[in-house]
Image (cartoon, rainbow, N blue to C red; front, side):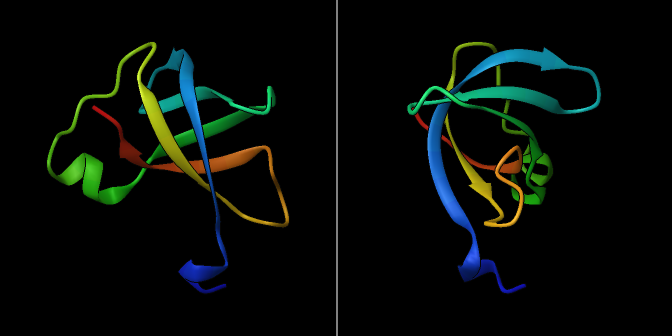
Length: 72
């Protein structure tokens, strides 16, 4: 699947798990299990509880995703 097929959803970090995994609550009220994208890991961008983030989600499984941007 190409990267332009992904759906981008905004939400906030609700829970932090070990290993760079997070539970993100979207603005629509649903929850997405997400991990950090490679650029966020490479440049060591910290994501903490309560941060506003953008999550890229596959149209096939809306419960799993990847955090691609942390809003300031």
